[in-house]
Length: 207
Image (cartoon, rainbow, N blue to C red; front, top):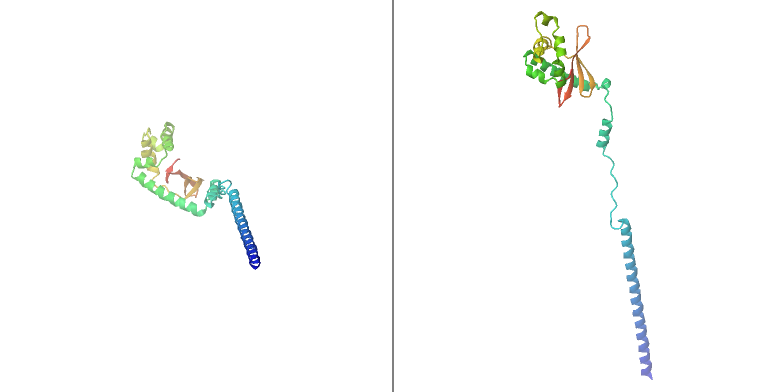
């Protein structure tokens, strides 16, 4: 009888242990399921962020400061009446040097170097039949029976006797690249010497 009771108690204890293991296993499964669900939620959230695997395009960068400044300068019109004093002084110094060199060319009667300093249009103007005929009417030329028929004649008989001592006393801006050079007579009146234009980094006479 005693043995029978002990066997019954042993079976009950085994059933209790088995039930405990089952509960433990169920809890483990629940924990694993929760972790799996959390993992799926993370993937779904990342999928929304990347828009189905495609990264969102980066926001457009603002224009650089340099680009903005260049556009501002391009839109700013040049005012020849309000050129900074230091800019005018620098350009006038450049023109004085240019005219002094031109004077030396004329003194040497160097026609080839002189003509290089004239624009094509100005060469055509000086070499026109109308200009040569008008220049030939000068008293000095008429007295010596000199008739100008070529640009070389004009250089030798008009430019060389009168333009080898030009002096630049003032300049006026026409635009950013074009200026008028003046000299002052004894009464301080401004007389235009040349009109020059900067082309290819150097000056050229256009009128």
